[in-house]
Amino acid sequence: MAKMKDIDIKKIISNLPDAPGVYIFKQKNRILYIGKATSLRDRVRSYFNPDIITMRSPLISKMLKEFDSIEHIATDSVLEALVLEANLIKKYQPEANIKEKDNRSFNFVVITKEDFPKILIMRGRELLISKPKDIAYTFGPFPSGGQLRDAMKIIRKMFPYRDDKCKPLSGKPCFNYQIGLCPGVCVGKVTREEYSGQIENIILFFEGHKKRLIKNLERQMKDFAKNHEFEKASHTKRTLFTLSHIQDISLIKEDKLNDVAHPSFRIESYDIAHLSGTNVVGVMTVVEDGEVKKSDYRKFNIKDGINDTKALAEVLTRRLGHIEWPLPDLVVVDGGIAQKRRMEKILRENHQNIPVVSVVKNEYHQPREILGDKKWLQYEREIILSNAEAHRFAITFHKQKREKLI
Image 1 (cartoon, rainbow, N blue to C red):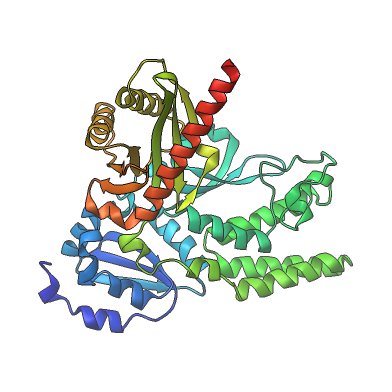
Image 2 (image 1 turned 180 degrees about the vertical axis):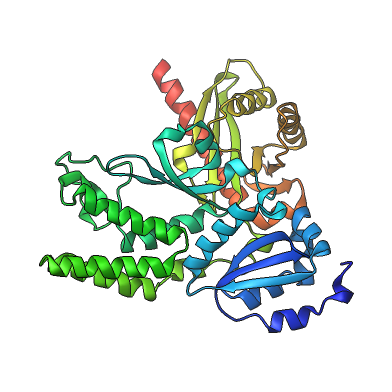
């Protein structure tokens, strides 16, 4: 790295705390990259580990050649580091953060504009097609969907809120109300004014105004006690305690090299099923943050007589026509080099710079080899999982189609 001789990396790392927070790579006054960490010292040290050089993205490698200083902001918890990271990325738009991933694939927390607002997680692509008048606040971008979902579980225990499954004043208790994660908008257990106070608390949390949030909760607790609403006062007191003792073990479980080598990539896998060229079907399956996302699976009917490679090309072309679907970070195809090249051609024709790997099978239809850039082998488990899901889903769809025709 060009500037390593001018920078005392060991000294920089030794001055970092073994605590959660946000680190900032800078070149003079320009911010190059912002990341969060469970341990600031360990995370920053990992960027200079020679064993992971080949796993770095080009933008991270470029950043490491250009930076001349590293700053940090310590936080009380990993959860607060995650929120601070998102706020700083939104404010400064560092190249290595924003271009590392298609901005439309980032995750955002959205608060709707309603009498009883919903709080939802949406991708940038979904925001583009949403009506701005329906949205009051957005927070993000959050690079990892998995970590954001874990974070929202912690936040929702402190500040129960309504989601899209809760119908205001319907008289029918939603599931989340029954388990204490909705304040009872559905059954009239909370007034519009009280719920607005809860939303205000959540906004303060996502804006990073912890001191103001604590004062807000203390005021609410006193008001409840003054009005002899002792159960609500007690609940607010517990929230205050939780806020000062956030248990974010689910966020700490992250791979310490997550930012450097294992960012959350969305993987889409494609497969074809037919019987001697009849009842041809294609499918798309999704693995996101290491887990299958069945709600994003899709089925495609294909004209009979078409071969597998052409069928795959048709499925991918039709899929790319759905601009409302989030784009993948990696495409997986069942087959060999011919299938891989055909999918790459379709992506180029649609102006999408998305890498493709193909899974080659043995005579028992078991994975034998993964063709593609070797850096993707670090995601071998996710690739094999998505490919197996595509094969299973395609066979199931094909059988259903045949049965309907019998």
